[in-house]
Image (cartoon, rainbow, N blue to C red; front, side, top):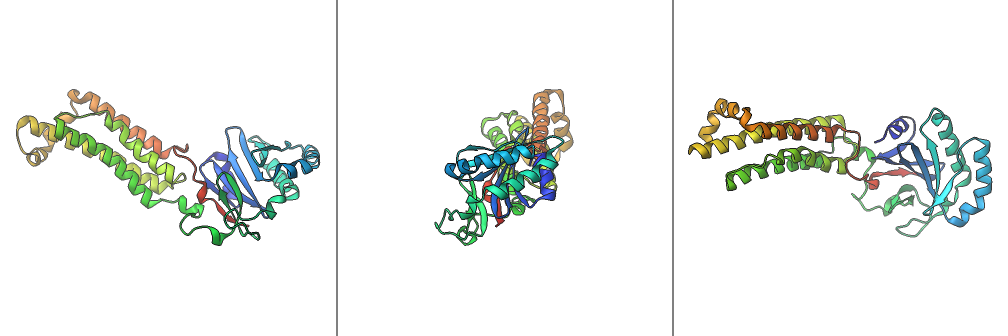
Length: 292
């Protein structure tokens, strides 16, 4: 979630997924896209309707000292810069939308092709009126559910991290050598999956993943080094584990500098990937639903 949407979420009834959000202004579904420079508010309407209101809406915008809208891809767009006047301009743009862009209220539900819609949701790239009854059960979720911990996706992300590390361990067993570079990929791989499914994962969810990421980056290299030493010494793996001080001493020695470097890099990349505010996956607009 971007900084502007994070602010708006406190004061406005919006649903957010990544850098995309939806809100309803006087019964009109409005899509919000955050960019580095500000936000774009867009409303679905026909080109003919937009042309019919263009002169009036431009004059109104100029009188209120806000940017005039433009039309592109079946949407009317308003841009609001992220500057000191944002808090003043944003409500003005909402009022202009409520006053002029009323055509969308008359649109039929894209699913059943009937009117009298009661919900705003995405249909493809368009934030439109739909019937709540037409939305397949389980296909859409409230934005709050897509945030939070997201336990199923969190567990899958943890398994992805562990699975990548396990590849190195199995490779050692099969080929009598390890691929230390794999340590760099594990943490980020699991985090990227989680962020792609739960863009706004909560702090507790991030902390849980971080704990497993760090623990697995310590445990699996230890087991891998123990297995390698057991093979070289011709003793059982379990017996080598019981000699853990010896294993730990060798693991931290200069002979394993590259491995230790990869482990440190993997942990750092995994932690950065899960805690960064940037969304590593695409925003899931299916989670954006609001009553009209």
